[in-house]
Length: 312
Ligand SMILES: C[S@@+](CC[C@H](N)C(=O)[O-])C[C@H]1O[C@@H](n2cnc3c(N)ncnc32)[C@H](O)[C@@H]1O
Image (cartoon, rainbow, N blue to C red; front, side, top):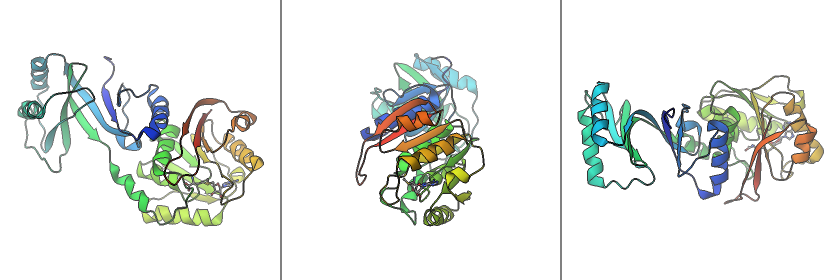
């Protein structure tokens, strides 16, 4: 665990358990356990729908007094800081003791604190009888505003799945160029834009394109949306996300789905596909290999189970 500089905390509805595990496998190469993940990778917690906090470890020790000595040695000078206790699964430290520990670290940081609008949050937490001191970065819930997007349709992807698709496609690397090959009303694009990803959209249907553009403009995001059959788009991407048509509001059949998968495979080596049926044969036909997979059970207004295929 010595090379792990970061502790990530997770929160998710049980219904998304498999999707969260898929996301952590794809981003960190490891699965989340006890809602926690130790990693050497630095990821912005706001790119994932499931990561709540990122704790950057400055110092750790099983001996609390030694930890305080180490914090003193850091000689931290910080104006506008705040100290917060992060409660991890299994930590039974009581409220009063947590307050005392906050005071302990607050006294060891030089500067005037700002409790309401801190520039930086220093934090302390305990896991497996080891105390950790570090910097806490919290998840930004601003993306929840996308619930009120001007255009939606009942079979649009949910925001949580859309956000996970972006983090999975990019593996958390914000420099990647992404394509939403069948953008519908732009649910995936909104999540990518919120997290600062470079994403293009494409849809064969003019109304879908119009709605995507209006949804993006509503939040002040700018991204290119092509009104095109994906097969006619001539550009390469680091990853392509496909939410295949379901044959509900727009007609679809295996030939249309195969065309979309084949055309996407020409544009990128990494394809993330969402389907409502088994598409293994189509993936093989396109010369792709499924490297990871999960199912997301139906929930709320959603009529069907979705499958997420990671292909390369
Ligand atoms: C399931 S919907 C996508 C929904 C979208 N993810 C959302 O949440 O709004 C599939 C979309 O694929 C589009 N589509 C179908 N065939 C296409 C093609 N050949 N090229 C591009 N888009 C296509 C449809 O117009 C439809 O909007």
